[in-house]
Image 1 (tube, rainbow, N blue to C red):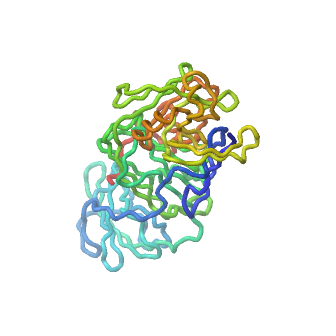
Image 2 (image 1 turned 90 degrees about the horizontal axis):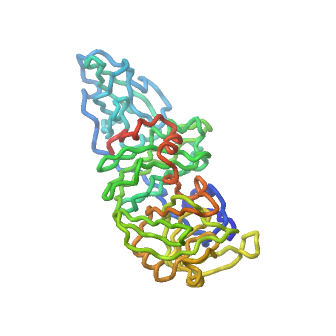
Image 3 (image 1 turned 60 degrees about the vertical axis):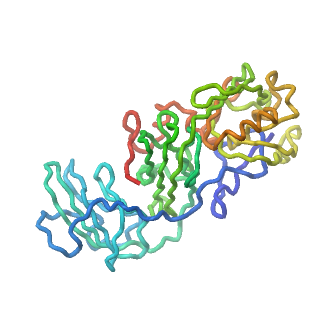
Length: 422
C-alpha cells in the first residue's frame, strides 16, 4: 500500500521522519503518543546533609566541581569532586543565593550528585560536598558557581511513556530526539537517561543508527507487575552541534500481565498466550508476495477502534485506496497493523492477500483489541521480508548480545543496574 510517513508525532514541536518506509497498510496520519513536555517534580532524596555553606569544617579540603567561581555552567550540571581512584561522593548540599535547598541524589557509583530537576538558568548556586577516599577518610569542600543563560538553539525530544498507565511486557522505554544525537555525544546523553525498575531488573540502552531514538529494555521481557520509573534528564545538556537539550521528562508506569501473539506464515494461524498459556488460536491472512508482512518481533504501538487507511499517495495505482478499518493495532511505522478484515475472511488461514497487515475476522479483531495493551509483543515468522531496524519499536527483534552493542556506554554482563534512585 505505499509508503507511510510519520508526521506530527511530537505535537506542536517536532516533525519526525520514519526510520523506514515500507509497503503496507497505512492510516490517516495517526501515530503512537508520547510525553511532549513538562518539568519533573523535585525528588526528596538529597543524598545526605553536610555542613551548610559558610560553616567551618575540620575535614581535609576537597576540590569541588564545578570549580569555585565558575560561570556559564549548563543547567544539567552535576556536582562532583576530585577524589582519588576508588573514592566516592557521600554527601552534598546545593543551595541558591537565598538559601533555598535543591534536592538531588548521589549516583550509585558515587561519582557525582544529580539534582532532582534541572538547575535554573542564570542562577548562582553554592555546593558543599563530602567525599571519602579508598581508605575511608573523609574530605569536604565547597564552591559557588553560576549557570548559563537560556540557550537559543535546542533540540526537541519525546518519551513514549505516560504516568499511571499499564503497558505490555515488551514495552521498551523509547526516547526520541530531533535532530538525532551525534554519535560523539551519545555517551554523555545516555548518562543522563535514568531507568529504575521495581522489582529490580538489569537493562541497557540501544541507539538507532541515526541517533533519533534510543530504546531501553531488559535481557528478557519485563516481569508482569513491574514498575518502570524513567527520567530523561536532557534539559541543558550541551551537544557538539551547538545545540542543547530542551527539557527533562519523567514518567512512572506499570507493566501488566504477560500477553503475547505469535503468527506462523506456514500455518497462517495466530496463537495467543496469556501468562504463558495458550488462550486462543485464530486464522490470519498476511501480506501477499508483492507486499509481504515483516518477519520479526514487533510491539503494539497504538490502538484505534476505528480509523481510515488512506494510501492514495502510493506510487503503485494498484495499492491506492481509502478504507474504513476497525480494531486497528499498529505494529510498524511502515504501515503494518493487526486489524479486522471482513473482506478477506475466506482467505484467512489459507492464503496471503493483504498489503502487509495481519488480517483477522472482525470478531477476532474485537476479541484481541479488548485484551491487548500498548507494549504487547507480536512475533511473525516465515514471510518474505525481515523486520527492518527502527521500523517500529524493534528493541526486542535483537538478541541481547546484539542489543547491547548499540549502547554508547559499556554494559556489564547481564545488563546494567539503576544508576540513580528516582
